[in-house]
Image (cartoon, rainbow, N blue to C red; front, side, top):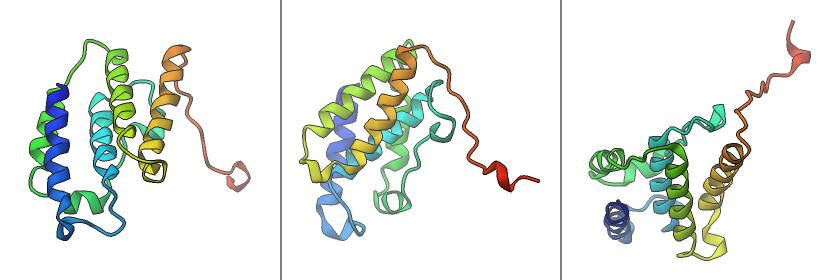
Length: 142
């Protein structure tokens, strides 16, 4: 399983090493972030906040990542665990290992993913169900 992820990362790092394949503001850590998002979306955590049930993959990345995306999506879908806690631990370890490859200025997206995953981990730890937050202003309702 870990080998499958490493192969995906290796292919995309090689692909994006060619500047003609890069989009504006590309950072090598984007690759780990987007693979992390693919994992997050695949695991479909029940304690994910309702407005982050899935992480959007940027159009820039999707339009630039080459022909392998669908194949890699199929590989990601083969990664399954007995329960959500095992999937969560796997994702947290993946993020930790990914962050170790980069310097602080390169970690913006991985930090963002880690923030959401860790907040969700706390809900599992405390056995708290997700509460829906209504972002509408009650003063504007008639």
